[in-house]
Image 1 (tube, rainbow, N blue to C red):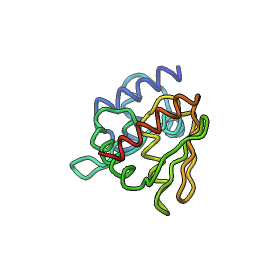
Image 2 (cartoon, rainbow, N blue to C red):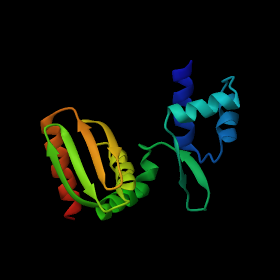
Image 3 (cartoon, rainbow, N blue to C red):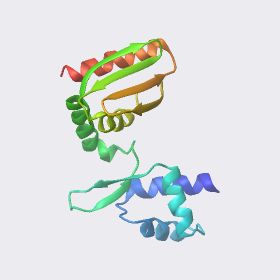
Length: 151
């Protein structure tokens, strides 16, 4: 039941502009799901839904992989490219050096890139560590980031 509800939520936010949890709740109930506000709130957290600014100035729900957020992806790439000073790897760990205070923003941008092999990331004030599944994937990510920085 939870999986079908989650899929329905993803369908709703991909096909409609939904601005509030209540909007998701109403659409789920209309689709036959008996849910509460608390359940919708937990589902939003579980699905890692985010709100993005629409051209009409409102914030709507979306997911990181939603194609309609591609303009946001361009912004994330831009923030990432401006924040990063260098990138290197040691074994299966990628180390990204950033300007002071920018590592968290750059790390959020890195997370949206969905690069293969990243197990997890952690950011400090000026450094990001990305744990990779293998050394070859770490080398690939370093090369990809260097290409992005050289654009």
